[in-house]
Length: 397
Image 1 (cartoon, rainbow, N blue to C red):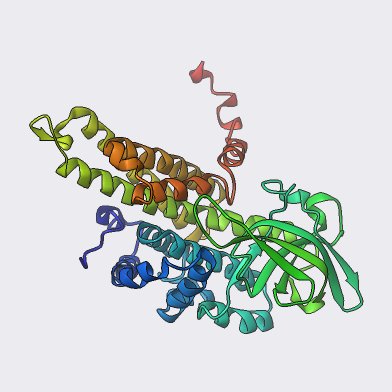
Image 2: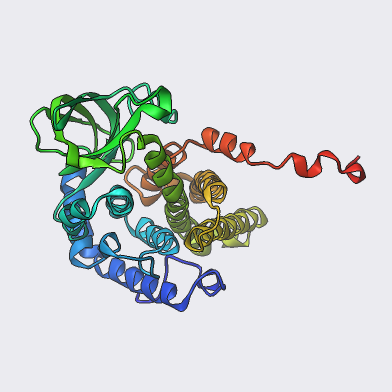
């Protein structure tokens, strides 16, 4: 193939992107096409084994080197992360999954770690030698980060962690964990801190979970896990701020992944409509099918522009949290509709077990939940509405 197939080149040529962005995402697209035989050969292994192998693939090819970059460049800024996730998701769900979790977890160390912490962990993560995980959620604490209960009590020059974390991506293969725990400096959000916890420490255990879209996923347990004080990230009591900061930054990248999944579904639907013969013509000749495909194209374009807008704001040091929430909400909601409409266009062929569309149907659904559920994002977006702007506008009566 060799041509860029995971993106709309017209959008990449907009002033929102630099030529270097296009150059690097084109390289990644070509690399993914070259890796198809390797990726197919990994399918015989379980999702955890695949995740390990994919981290090594990504690391050896240099696609995780943004974790050791000293400053934002067209290979390490927010726009690149979104574009890269779109490409990886277009080609392989688990490849995107490994890239995204490694990037999110490593970015916490990159942003809030000491020089010693960065030097120790980031090169290993960038090479794919180690796997990382971000351990935030608990059985009774998901979107409500302030409800975290896992305790970290100070004992001498260490903190002792006790409790559980739930639904942790890469939790069953992680070598290091970014853990948000309650240190008790204050009530609710004020009493949380962030730690780097080596997964091999005594008292750390995991229970591997299954998921509708197979992936490396686990519950974690901490039983009297002694973590050195030097492993705290930032300052004690900053855990809530660290968690929200990293989630705000990475929500827009979920939009990128959603575009990748849904673009593949739209391409599958378009190819089928072009080749399927019906009523002495093609499926593509039917007005309702044309309309469905047109709506897919509109949704993909809008999702791409909203995601680019969010990333552009972040890269230029502007307020971006609202735009990140908007991009994730719209792109993931539209992706679900695009995949569903693609199945409708394929008819019976779309519901065959093991087909690409079945996998996409499973893969797209979790995106509307993790890193901020759609409902939570709507509340966040609503809270940013400027009611004072129109309060005294008599012309609006």
